[in-house]
Length: 547
Image (cartoon, rainbow, N blue to C red; front, side):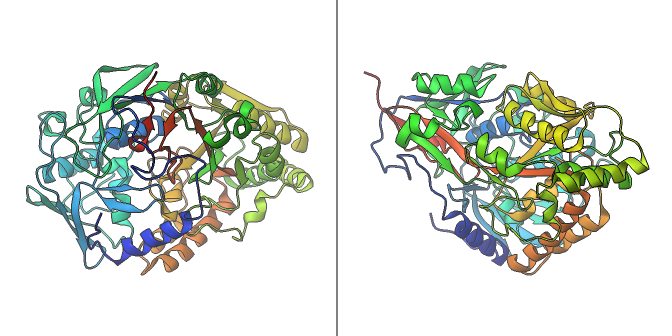
């Protein structure tokens, strides 16, 4: 589609993102819509997923299972194509002269699936709900740079102004060159008038029965908790992502082994993550139906400073010791069969600005001798006691690497170390969100939008929505802000590199590796493309009619 003018900041970042991602390719037989036969228009595509942590309110969902559903049933101001390039979707134009004040014009006559208009109010009201302190939305910090945002009391976003039914204006507190690029993230999705209560808050009922404006809609009684959610084609959708199938059923699996078995047995059409047990064989098993490509996924584990022995100087020494104790190259080779790449920074290889030579990155080097020295130095401050554990959800493919990492720690440092499994992802995430977890825990990031800032601010900025370890460093926050207000992407990324070097000193999380998009699809399934963030573009997928 023809791009409208949206400011130099977005154009530079979008171009950079496209160049960075152009080298990635999929093993799929698919591509753009129409590149292979359309197949059966009445076919329902089945795929894997996980039960959302909570209700499907866009600004209150920050995990992959819920995000996958939201992206299917909502349309945002922009969407990202397979290579991470943004395209206007609900927006007709996004204009700015200074990267501080943005005028957003919507396409006319768009509706939610219940008939409510997709208008300026549906965005402004949703964003105000997201930013309201008492609502405690998980993604509230995404709105922190809009005038009027307050993290101490309830307040309206004074930087939002409805000009007319299809136009609104956004005024930021400071210039933010990548603000338009962020607008494809689910936090910025609109909410229909029917989704609000009399006080202007999005209701819990809406979260359980979401009404969107996207490619698909939730089928009547289609969400069976902890089992699956059925999405059907939204025939009223008029954007570029028109579904080439009749719907998508997302099955919630307790293990990827079970999902892979269903894929091999013809009971699942698309699987977006291969289990550890099949990492060495899936490409042989599936042939040209296998996918193994770079993706915007960073993996780590977090050690909260509130845990005994992990605050102050002692905590700094112990984190560095643990990092040096891990043989990342061996784990990515032996356990993941090269479906992971050892981390060298805090982003991902497909993101513009990714680096292999940051100061302090040598803390990621496997060095058992150095690890023991650092641990002994920490013991001089306070003698270690207890067991070191890494918590993880057992319904995902994590036991193998957690066991390997904790075994390395045990052998290198001479301490007791092990994994701490939690049966279900939702329960695991809830314990983290509630700050009830008393161990280290697996963490990481799947990009929301293709920018380096996105891999830093949401996870490590003071008070950020996904800062689950409650890390806070004013110098890091200041450096991030300087990067965000930089004149161009090159200058911004230099500042973001400085911020990453601070992270290497503090180690709020222990970087491990970047995860490839490794998955596969079934016989008779076509047009399968895994996006820059590893999520398949479901709307493009077709399936041959059953015989």
